[in-house]
Image (cartoon, rainbow, N blue to C red; front, side, top):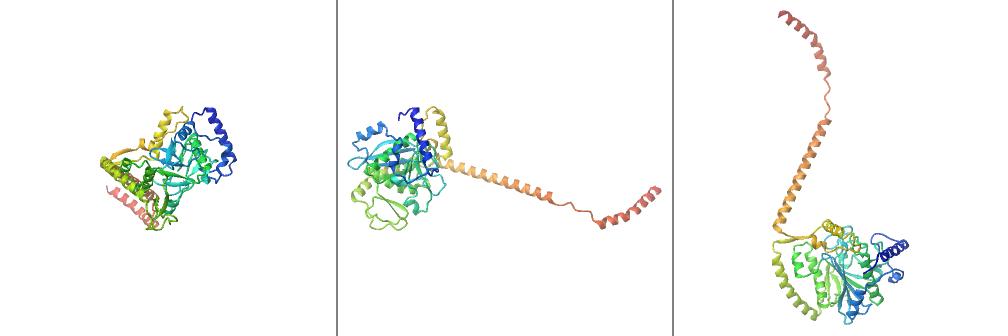
Length: 403
């Protein structure tokens, strides 16, 4: 965004002052604050983004929507045109996210959420410990229907994550400003689509053996509707699952049965059928390509190791925000090779456990032997021995004389 070092220092001092003013500040903290409280804090939208908004014929305060792709490490901001269709105005490299691909299920699992979330002005926090933050509203109705737990899951600055999607402060400055303008323009809430990856036939086939695949197939319906219409899908929950763009979906019970009268609008249903037929062809081709292979997803530690390497190579660039590490650090492996590796690791683990158990048994036996008391001399036997002693001596003398 072209800010100089002095601007960065100024922002840091301003942020520090605001932090001292906050009454409650914890990790990823969220207070219910009106966005107008930002009037004394410097936020800005870059001239590049302003120009894109103008070129697309959008109002500055038109509604927005956000898409997040974990594996690619990208956050996109989309904005509404006068015809109601959304176009992407900017995207950012996500600086850090924790956990692995897949949904968040419980407090403390370090998973960044996946799903569809609605953001209201009350979820905006200008006093965050992490510069600026937007609470994602986790758990939503779907998450609660499955008794999932978690709190303070954010998009925030500071480039550090413990279950959140973390950006650089400069990136967060613009994301926050775009959301604020949309709220100022009358948008009551905006949608965040947090997805594991771009849900293309190629990516779906690559991840088809994941334990989360059925969950992702459900999210893909909402993803597809947006790809088709460029309008955020209407989201509801019943039978512990998301349903999208369904007529008659008002007032659904997230854990109750989906009513029979739910129906996709005919025009959308027709377009989706054609879309899905094309998708199935491409998916089948990708499935053949990955036959016999599985995607070995990197752990968070493996991603961080790669990020540390990249940062060392860009240590003079304070604005460097590495991303894409989930793709860079992961790899395709043959299922047979992976099974052989897993078997070898299981055998090695079993051998270590046997050796450990044997060592523990040996130590236990040694300790037991050491604790056995030495038997005391038998007093009666000692007395008998003493009585025999003189006779034995005489016998010895007699024997000597005879010799």
